Image 1 (tube, one colour):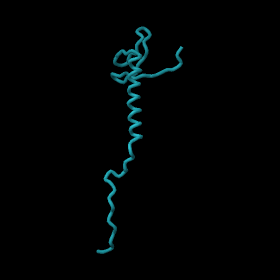
Image 2 (image 1 turned 30 degrees about the vertical axis):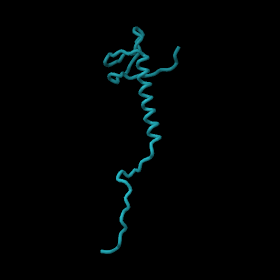
Image 3 (image 1 turned 180 degrees about the vertical axis):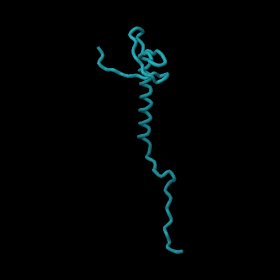
Image 4 (image 1 turned 90 degrees about the vertical axis):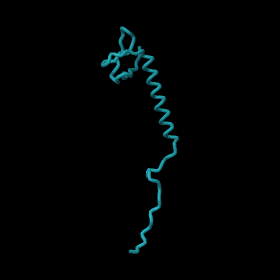
Length: 81
């Protein structure tokens, strides 16, 4: 018997999905869309892989200056009026 519970959101409307024992599919509580469990799990894996790749790319990118205007020297005050 499975011991892990996973809550999925509907790919069509983001509503909660529940497992229907009658059909063996995940059914949306709101839009009544029906999905194979493997289909939804593959979609979630794909989204996670994209998020991981984006995070890896961001971590590998060189750090940029917080000053988006660049670093320009500021002229010193001359004290003359």
